[in-house]
Structure formats: C-alpha cells, structure tokens
Length: 365
Image (cartoon, rainbow, N blue to C red; front, top):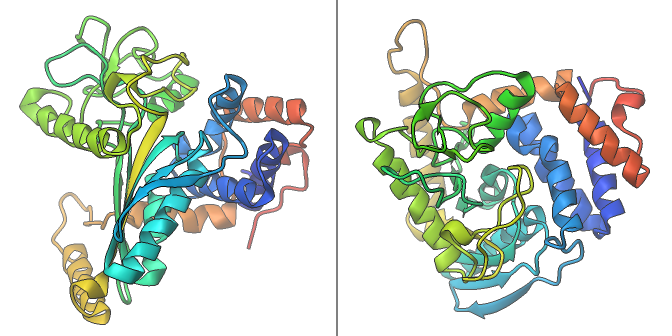
C-alpha cells in the first residue's frame, strides 16, 4: 500500500520534470490519483508513463496556451494546444460553469487535447455550485461497431454528476464498452483472461484473450453482442464521438489519435485537431429551486437504496462503490501492482524523482 499523498507528490514531481507549470502539474496529479483513490486503477497512476510517451512522440505540450476559438453566451469551443487532457478538461468545465452562472447552462466542446483521465473528476466540479455536470470524451479506435471487425471507436465514456442535499451526489461514470481498455491492462499484468463478451479477435470471433486488442482484435460495445444489446452500446459510443470530435473540430472515429498504452502510437489522423471532449454545466435553479431538487434527489436515492435486493445484495446508487473505496484507500493506502511500481520507478530514475515506495510510507489520516 502507498499513501495517496506520497503518490500524489511523486506524480506531481514527474509532471513538473516534464515541464508542466506547477499549478497544472498539481491539478494533473490530483486527477490521476483521484482515480486510484476511487478504485478506478485503470485510469490512475498506471497511466503516467503513457503521458510521458505522448510527450516523447511530440504529441503532448507540457505548457499549453489554451484558447477559446468560438463562443456564444452559452457555448464555446476550446483549443487545448495539445496539452494534458487532465488540465484541459477542467479548464473547459470552468468555462462551462462560468457560462451557466450567467445564462443557466454552459457547454464546451474541446479540440486539440489528450487523454483526460476519469470523466467523473471533471463532471463533479459542478456539484459544489449546485450544478449538474456533464463530461464525455472519445478515445483512440479500439472498439468495433456491432457486426464489424474494424476498430472505429474508442471506449468513449459518459459521466453525469447531480448534487443531492443530505445524500452523496449521484455520479454516473461509465464507458460505452463492456469494459475499458485499462481493465484489459490490469488483466494482462495479472496474466488473466477476460470474461466472455469483452473482446473479439482479429477475425471478429469471441475470445477471452486479454491481449486480443494488441493482436489486432477489438473491444466490444456495451452489451457484447447484438443479442445482448451491443447496438445500444455502439450507439452511445458513436454519440460521444460526434459530440467530442465532429462538433468540436477534433479528429473522430478511426482518426482519433490513440493513447500511448495500446501498443501503438500512430493513427489515421487528418480530419481534425487532436483528441476532443465535451463538457457541460446546468444550473439546477435554471429548472427548479435547487433545495427542492436536491431534496427530491435525496428521496429518489433513498427509495432506490431501499429496494428489495436479490441473493443478499443491496441496490447501490451510481457513485457508491467509488465513494466507499475512497474512504478505505484514504486510510489504508493505495494498492499498486508490481508491474506498475516498476514502471513508476523507471520514470523516477529518468526524471530524478524518488518513488514513494522508498520513502516513509505511513498511512494517511
């Protein structure tokens, strides 16, 4: 176990060594480590080396000059100047909230960015301002449409965050595939197979090989196959791609540049600029009094939690598992797999940053 504060400091120092300004290095580290705290290990510090490789390949600018290239009172297009998506997406959400403050809602499409970590971090920024937050992004092509063996879409997550009054917020953060690619990476590190319905091989046949995507196969849309609704997952992934890419002016579909963890770096780029996101903020009181809404959301949450469960299970609300995991990991520390530790130590040696496993590693309080 590694104390989250020590891990955060290490990640921040790596970003600083890459040339990021201090405020942006701190923000980027917070986004990454928040994923590990919430139990979303696929999008946490295990991704750090991927950002370094993006920089090494000239695809990441550690000191971006972000700028709005088009806007109306309620919308904007933000050019991220090839910066860390971990920094670009929060800036886009800030712009969306500023617009929502003035006119009720704000929507920002982003182009020329990079992988932005967990969608939940960015959408949750709206909660403290009694706003509903939206966050989505497309990604490099690892996913096949239903009835195809071509990889044309990314895992393309969608997130919605809603503020409650006494209950924790509603926080839905989901990929539009049966599983995110990062979960395949975890299985690869453990030398385990995937469950049925996650991937297909290069010939379009079902497989449980966790390395199938690296061998020319593909991730499957949410549902896995047509009989289990994969056309719906495909449709959701396509929607995210259209909002994040076609609407923003970023690349889209098979032209979205891949992140640096899928075993390849090149993409069929040329139809837009970089990777895109789409973020939004809706002021609750633009629809009804905020306290009234939050009280009713409390009631909604309590009613669903009280639903009769099956086989000893209880109904949980989107966001519950991550909150429960965060409470544990803030106290007990974050478990990091040995291959990830080796990767992080290698980065530390390159940039002259001491890995926290070599420090006093007492748990946080």
